[in-house]
Image (cartoon, rainbow, N blue to C red; front, side, top):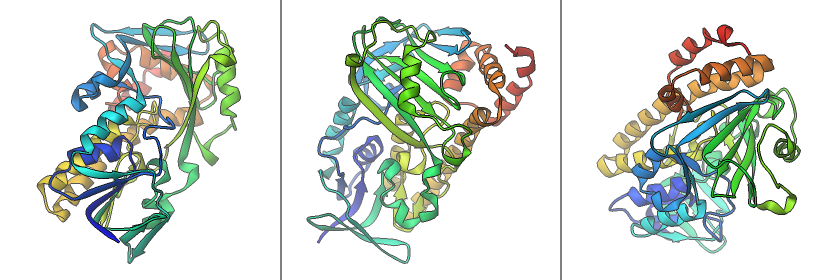
Length: 382
């Protein structure tokens, strides 16, 4: 049996981000994956602010000064800025950058699966792998949608019907416009969801879609693979020369759509990243929010005793929960509104000026902003 101050489960942006910021602790980070950063479950796109804030510029594959909103009825609105605003990342490279920082502060073991989680009265006493037993004063669940520790501490939270699903191809040899990141909306593309084309080079891109209303909440069952092929072959998307042999990689992932985790700590366990629902269901963005939650918890633990750190981190998560609930207001249109309602809503968004549109894309808006927007919808019917 080996004892540490802190054990982190999960070597993703959240787990490595936390390990890179924590100070003066004996830390173990453990993950089941043999090759870190794979398989890729992220579209790996983010904003300029993330690159600067977390020093990830070396992981960029492609940058764009703008984006487009495109509806299935042909409506297109371009947003262009003086400087790059969106970037596609090399996800394994990003993980490697975070790994190099983290290993200066901690020990990292992989591949090593958590076979058992031993708890007593809601407190984790130890975790077991095939080869060893590890004890710690504090545990961090950064295991993403698997929620390896959380599901032992709060079983009612872990319900599959709260997970939304996405599928993406990374493709090459295409003829497409690499000046923009494109976002596509409309039920003719995918019911209750959206699609995207994110350039990763002059002739390469990530093309994917996400179904945003999961489980029993969804009105229509969708085969994601069939829907993605239909999307790529449609007239809506301007892609030439696509064939099956263009597909370099297939990425798939899930995220929490409903009920953001409101309690991020359970006695001697804290939950960060996707495991604590730190992802925007509006456009499926997770990297930025995972890195931020990890850093906030590390700052709290570096600066305060355990209970004060718990209050600090709880306050952060509570603020983010209100933030993500605002995002969900948009997504209810995919469940409740007919297709014209979705078109009207997107066009109303597109009529915002460039500054406000970028703010909404980054999920930086308040519920009052959305309510005000609703009053414009009847004037913007398509």
